[in-house]
Length: 278
Image 1 (cartoon, rainbow, N blue to C red):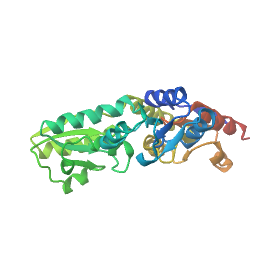
Image 2: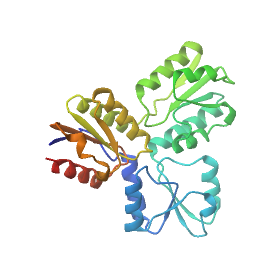
Image 3: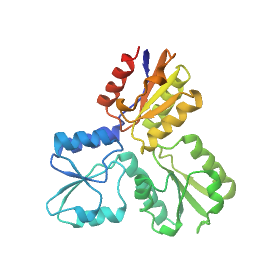
Image 4: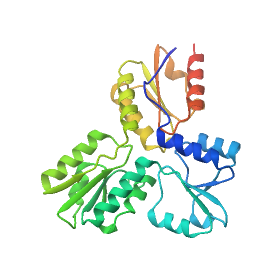
């Protein structure tokens, strides 16, 4: 079995930065899962004693608490800083950008539109920076705009950092046709573009694609969706234990890519198992 790796894959800048912070602060805890990869979270727990808090009430005096890469809601961050704990902010800088844009534009009287998944922690954090929460709106599809009534005649838009740029353009174009003033901020991460383009190109050349990453990771699910457009036999797995030898029957070339929260050690384990198939 010939394995071909995408030209861009795996850890992005923000995740590398967060992992380094967690390794530097042994015996700390993260507020929410640091990244969307349970195997890497388990490694940090085992090797660096990095724990996990799901709620602010879990935090104890003198704790060292690391903010997850996706960020947390503004009020949660404020309340956490008010406690007697050391707060280390590992929010990805590319996620901090839309937070600050929403804060600034809403203060200037703009209605806010976020392209993203309303249940994703990054989007919840970005949404919280709006001055008027009743005028911060979240959509996933252009048709969702039909249900929205903006309070102001000027609108500012941002996007979840891992979303498809093509879909964002569809939403923006729909907005522009119906509103006089639309401020558009491209907050989709360049690393996301590069990984998606590389996965798209590779999926056209291979017999099957393996996408490695967390099942709850937005950017990994996007990669899988893109691969499926060109290669029907595309599979999303979290680690080598989920590989099925039947997938590789009568196949010659296997493409491999990985989400932004997938560490190299997991990718290598997957490749080694694929190469062992006869």
